[in-house]
Amino acid sequence: MPDRPRQLRRRVPATAGLRKGVTAVVVLGAALTVAGPPPAYAARPGGSADVLRQGLDRLVHDDRYPAALAATLGPDGRARHYTAGVADLRTGAKVPADGQVRAGSNTKAFTATVVLQLVGEGKVALDAPVERYLPGLVRGEGIDGRRITVRQLLQHTSGLPDYTDHLTDLTGKGRHTYVPPRTALDLALAHKARFAPGTGWAYSSTNYLLAGLLIEKVTGRPLAEEITHRVIEPAGLRHTYFPAAGDERIREAHPDGYVAAKPGGPLENITEMDPSWGWAAGQLISTPGDLNRFFTALLDGRLLKPAQLAQMRTTVPADAMWPGARYGLGLVSVPLSCGGRMWGHGGDIPGYQTRTGVTDGGRAVTVAVTAVGAPSERGPADVRGVIDSALCR
Image 1 (tube, rainbow, N blue to C red):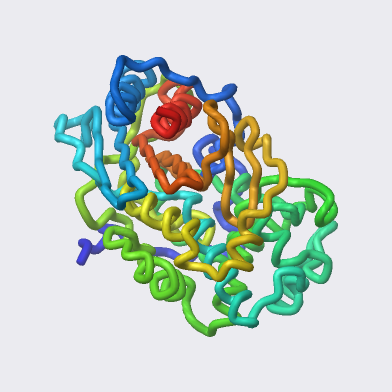
Image 2: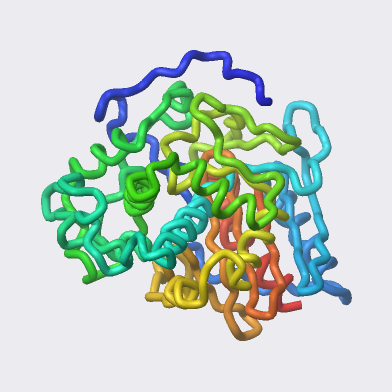
């Protein structure tokens, strides 16, 4: 069991202390500032292993991430792990192979999977209004749950404002504050809609906050329990978990996470934090290897029925995420430089950034780095470039 946090938890009222402030690192996986297409790295002769080793070295030495981790999973089920850098800038400790990281918005894919399982069980209808499951809850300026569907939540076409745009102090003392889902929702609903439902696309973690509340209302069980029993255990993810209330630490071997206020700025250790504000949109802890196993199981049809997997893979343009990106239902597809597309999601949360890529042929690569508020402006694109080069090798 993890050690108890040294600080008592405090429940915050609806909007106390959550005014708009430091938001540069409050992204939860969107990486919406696009620094151009990922570079296709030229590697010395060799296979994808050489590409990954060289790519991770570049992420550490050129982009100045403290640590970079990667995992691959082949169609034969064989997994490989790679590391570069140091786990702790203070001690220079070695990076653990397949170490745990905060998975950020990869959590959205887990949440969407549970919702789609409920659709397959006939308990939820994708094109039903949110109002059917959460009556009277979704109201605001230009916001009406009677006009927003479950599908629009999962696909980010609801027009709902993003509560993470209005959180503050998540890298200071505020990172030790417990933020309940309803508090975060109230924060979002205090702002007007971005657009009418179904008329645009905009990444908003509020969508997945509501998806989590919907899961709890329909099942009568806590979200963490449903994700664990329906996704984590069936997929055989031994190092993935939903942190309990008050659990600020990362349980197993892990590299420390860091944050920079601006590109090139000093890095501050932010490993210990209360991730409750991420909840259904970004609270999970996992490893690169487990994320490969999850997305592979998902796309292989081991977690969803064919009809629901087909819905999940039905996408709309989402170029605001990355060039050429398309968003399904909790699932992102991105073009590969060698042709075809890779599937996954990705996640940014203070301290950690992860990117995932699985091909239809069953090859999977996940890369994680241990800083957000990138040490270099090119860093996020370079992370994607490493995955692209490894899958195209």
